[in-house]
Structures are given as structure tokens and as C-alpha cells.
Length: 301
Image 1 (cartoon, rainbow, N blue to C red):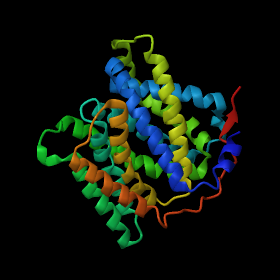
Image 2 (image 1 turned 180 degrees about the vertical axis):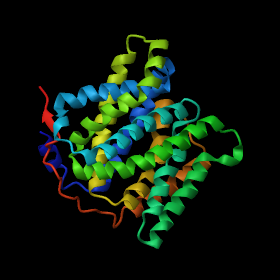
Image 3 (image 1 turned 120 degrees about the vertical axis):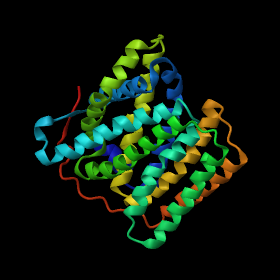
Image 4 (image 1 turned 90 degrees about the vertical axis):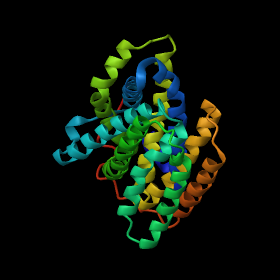
């Protein structure tokens, strides 16, 4: 089944796969707000990772014995980055609007895109996207929660690392195989912070089913799509294409959370969409042959 899905997406432009993943991630983040109000950001992130493990292992169980020693550092690093990227992001969303959080967090992938670019002219698009990010955040108002901004910046650092490591792991394992190895690590990494919040929170009857549904969207579907997209795109193209994500954050924030953007923020949205659309031109990457053919995972029951 995993191979049929991958083959079915082979002819789909990689940038459209990335866009689908971004929409799914922002939808899951918006839906997480209600869960955060009951079990906190760390508790919500841990529940998402834990349910993600359950769903992933229903389709693909990691065959630990087939791992090589040199695979472990990247898998461990990606798992930890994934867990804390989600935890820190939700901690920021608890304090500042979704669109603003995504805009600030985007600075992480933006730095990766600029540093790893092989063409100087490609830096025009990250620069344009940065201007859009500034317009989205509107720092001149002086009313942004600095703690929330700090959480978003820390999440951005994890996001930049996540993108680099996801492409590396994606070159070694197929999407769902890689996730079945890294999401359990993310769940373990966030357990010391998440479990106390869950136990000390308000576990209404709908909280766990809601967290499970969100986990199916992200990390299972969305992160799988991202891993597939990163196998076929350069870091620069993918990182700058992510400049569209603040626009998606504003849009989902408006539709799901009723967080209305101002005129200046809409101008920022237009700029980041322009930068993201332009950046994906010439960003196609020929995927490296998988070093294993779905060997790292064995079918679940």
C-alpha cells in the first residue's frame, strides 16, 4: 500500500504536495487550540505524537534490527526536533494569533533557505518573504506577547533543523517508514513535559478523541507528505515555498479561530505568497534512490 501511494504521487508536482502538507498542518494547529485549553501545549503535542505512533504502527511497524548505526543520529535528532517544534509552536499559539506565530516561526526555514542557496539571485525571494513576515507580525505596534514570540522563534529553530533532517531521512527511508521511526522518538522526547500537563489538565470526554483525530492529520498525513516533497525539492525551494505558510496560518486562523487579519497583514500575505510561488521555480530535486526498499518497516496487523 505504501508503494502504491508513493507511485500515485510520483507525477504530482512536489510543490503541490508541500502546499497540501502546509494546509493540513495549519488546520491541525488551529484544531489543537481547544485541546491546548484543557491539557496545555506540551500535553497536546505529546498526545498528538503518541496517537501518531499508534496510527503509523497500524500501517508500518519499524524493524529496529534493520537499522544501521549511522542512521541513529539523524533519526534521533529528527524525532527530538519534531517533538519540540510542535510543543513550542503550540506554546506560542496559546499566547499569540496563529498567523503571527507561523510568520515568526517561518524565520527558521527562511534562514536555511538563504544559507543553503547556491544562487545569489535566489536570495531575493527570502528577502521579499522576510518583508512580508514583518508586515504580518506588525512589530511597531508593540503589543505582541514577547514570551509567545520567544516560543515561536524557538519553534522556528526546530523547524529549520526539521527540514534539513527530514530531507536526509527521506533519502534513506520511505515517508511512512521514516515517520514510524521518528515519531516514537518525538513522543518520548516530549513525554516529561506533556504527561504532567495531561494528568493535571481537564480531560473531558472529547479531548482524547479530538487529539487522536488531529494526530491523523499531523503528524501522520502532513509529515508524510512533507518528507515526500523534500525528497524531490531543494532546501532553498522548499524553505522559501514555506513562506506561503503564514498566509495559510492567517486564513485558517480566520476560518477556524475567527482571528481577523488587518490591512497591513493582508499586504504581508500577498508578499509571502508571491515569494513562495516564485521560489518554487527551478527548485525541483531528483530524489535519490532509497537505500532500502521499505526495509526499515514491516507491515502491521
